[in-house]
Length: 151
Length: 308
Ligand SMILES: [Zn+2]
Image 1 (tube, each protein chain N blue to C red):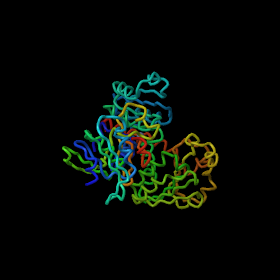
Image 2 (image 1 turned 180 degrees about the vertical axis):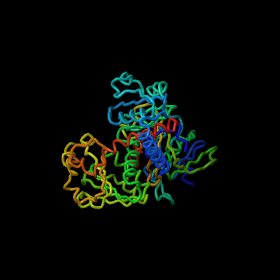
Image 3 (image 1 turned 90 degrees about the vertical axis):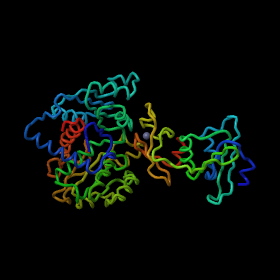
Image 4 (image 1 turned 120 degrees about the vertical axis):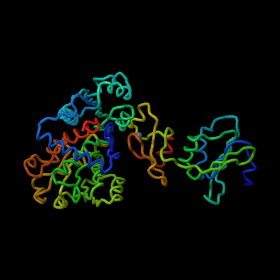
């Protein structure tokens, strides 16, 4: 944990065990790539016993909503979320891909009704590894880059 | 399963028991219809047929089914004649129409439109085709036709011929047939092979599947040959269409090699995939297949209305 201390935050969230290279995408999806007052740190390509190489994102003064955690799960299924209070990890959990993904993903099918009418998008997880989801409306499946591109 | 108020949107929503139940009710209704000429189950009930995209055959089949059940029909046959043209949302159209009717049949060019309609409507919604996605009543009538012709579905060897890549009908039919103990031959030009994920799913579900381009070599094996049209409008590329158009023609010469009991099906309309000379043979089942749409749709209308 020595490396964490160097850039320790007083209060906020540390997202650890992000697959190397996906850290920026996590920042983008959480819309942290704009000034919000708090410190934002990205450690990329850090050595990891579990993953070989990993990314870490630390966000000062922010706690994640369930929806945000679900988004992270889609990009970085291996990630763990640490909630930091008073420089200590107060809570720690692994992200988990839910069975249903509601509201956070757009359908890649341009002719899907969800892209034309007022609806809340909904997908069913068909497989977790590799991640494959099926649109509740048009029933098409999406995977890989298609999912990342439509978050 | 309580059918009253249930929506009929996708073959995926059905279990084998659901399918068998609908087929049995359809058979009962067909017998009753033969005996009495007209039925009264849906007397006083109104069906709204919302055809945002024209499909005369499907609409007539639903209308005929509702009339034969003793009910009546309102509706439109193209979006051009409705408020949709003025920019009304699908949800608002559905909420309005359900004030006038007891059950809705919807045909729409967008995938998922029927699912959305069903979520908005309090009354049952039946999908009559949403873009290239689902057309569940076609699949049920296909199964019904096979069952009526052979007395069973289990144990049959079925060939699906033509455009297996873009053909919505054959995708759903194959998925529904996976509930049964059947052997499938997928006969198509290389360019129009059945999508891999469907073949994998069929194999996972225990169906014996063989892919081939050879109709003549396969035909002696078959109990059912399900022919589809190669549809120009489904092709993203005209060149690709020209390469495969007219790939197969089922005619009396080809049928010489077939079992006497072979039955040929086609969702119609056909262009040149089946020669008219075949119509007069015992093999032709496609007009009977059109007729099957009526009892199957009667069953679905009556069940979802809760009058059967
Ligand atoms: Zn969709």
